Image (cartoon, rainbow, N blue to C red; front, side, top):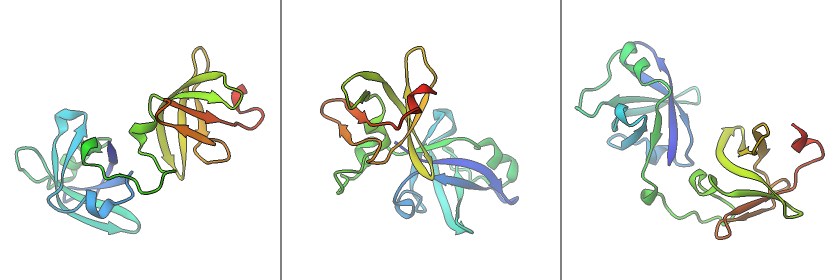
Amino acid sequence: MVVGRIGRPHGVRGQVTVEVRTDDPDLRFAPGATLLTEPPTRGPLTVEAARWHSGTLLLTLARPDGAVVTDREGADELRNTQLLVPVEELPELADPDSFYDHQLVGLAVELVVGSVIGEVTGVRHEGTELLVVRRPGRSELLVPFVSAMVPTVDLAGGRVVIDPPEGLLDL
């Protein structure tokens, strides 16, 4: 499960910025935490130090051989690396209306009237969470993941039901 994505380097001492994709960054990015990577050849990476700067998480990381990234060039080599934790390490979600991204990916997308229009291929975190829906022969659709537009998430049934406003499906 993706918990973050490495962004640009910060400064000249090897720190990287992180786009956080977890509700518990202090736990996931605590010093000593080991994170898997996508692509896998860049990791696993170990968090050596973490701090917040103007609302942005900054990490100092160590490579699989134990060498700490100490310069801007090394940090830049890690840019766009996704940081992951194994799914089995994820805690149960207390809120029945909360879901991990990996639980949603692969679900069929149906309209309230019952017709299947596609499949969830991803979740974007851009202020509001957006379901990325692949529709055969049509353009990709982004559906705000809010209860007014996604009234039903049926994990056992392998589907989400959407109630899009007029015109959304015409894109």
